[in-house]
Length: 639
Image (cartoon, rainbow, N blue to C red; front, side, top):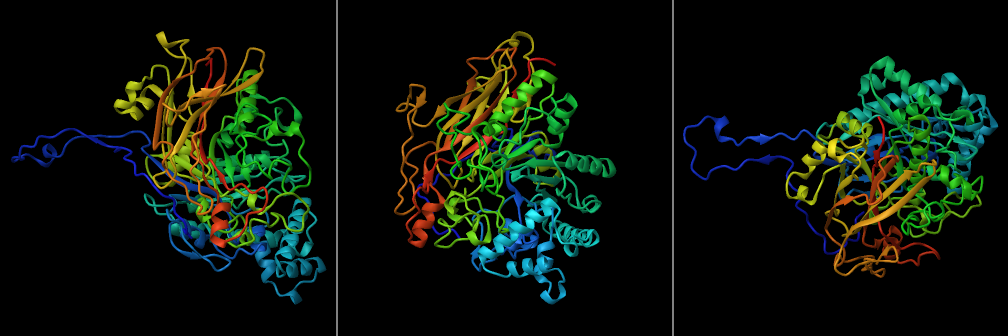
């Protein structure tokens, strides 16, 4: 539903991945074909960025179904590939730009159970609770949602009526739904064109604290069918999931990873300084967590988990997507205390990882960063002007900005506080399961809040501005490490020198210009205390904009809220820089990641205000600066 478009879009020549040698203009003689065709410099590194979503729910998720979703994995995959589908509320929906890959990640707990209960005639149910649940799901939106919350609580506490909780029945339902999903994924997987990966969501939630993980397989149907999605009910942490993953890998020779998400709704429980049971981390425990969870989902519909103003008080851009989500867990069962923030935001977790590594030699939080949607509509939309909402009730309609996120539950979250997106960007040599999964494992990925900026960074010891005059990407791989990599002390004459970062950012070809590029550094000092600093390293209009009292002057604002448009008359189409750490200490563990900011653009709330001719609710944000977060590069002083 692309109803509004933005003006002054800029096309970009990004450069060919393969380079050809020069050839004479003289006509070819009777040479062989091999002598006529110019030689090719074969690229041996990832040469393309692929865009996808690792977190999408269909009708098979019990909460999505109860909220009205009737679209199947087939519908979700067709939509992601660029086909038009009809949403659960009857709206024709289509992506302006298809995705390159998708993971259908339905909840493993009670997968398909609500669908079966909904479709069971009332007179075939004996238990009065099941009859009430069945009829509640057939009721209005508020009734359906209250029923869903009650079912969730029942499964989490183990208080599910025996008629529904019969192990044999659950096992049969799970097997049937998983096998059907595997068939759908295989049907739409087309190596080289579109990748569909097998996966599910492990939805561990303790006392309302979100400890969810998306589980993704590298493998095809033959190995995926040897297991069923692992349920979280009865578990107290992620360790049983890791046991399941390790057992799968040992039994099949396959590979699997887990991606934590919505750490911002964990009330401090996601990234503790202690290991399981509150004991100090051991090196083995730290390595295990890092191996099982190489990435986290840092931004999605339910808020942004990069950092928070309480933690990063000198970072003027640390508050993206916080409104309405920083005040408690999900649902709002326990109000958040200030001391909880440090255990749930990515930047602080990266710093905690350095502290633990200093003590144990292993870093449990050495993760890369991606974004995804967490859409429960089966429609993976991340564009502000094409937002289909978190739940079916949030699909485009005139009142969705005002509605409570969780109807019937007293809280302070409303529809306008949802973010419109999160996308996973993956650097890979080809669009296949193996290439995408392997990129995730080596953390050569980044997150955006929706736009498709092309961002690349390398860290090394001897980079200079000359690199950008040639094959700078080849130089980055040859003499440095890409995002997600680890630097050791420099060799020879470079030992003790400060690392240099090669940074390149290109605007979304169909989106907004860029404001600036920032490097976020975290480190641990000799006393074991962690620190962070944000550096503005390159920005648009450098002749006019200066750093004043530690802050770069703003880029400006061209947003017209009356029409929900903006103009690319400010900002830059591309920004690049070779940056050297001015405060490097060779004996200190550190990490570096890059944040790229766009110029201000309208949010989905502004598009809705124009589309439906409604007045936005008080406090609704109508514009923002969307962004990208790269995976970090770590510096380790020893080893």
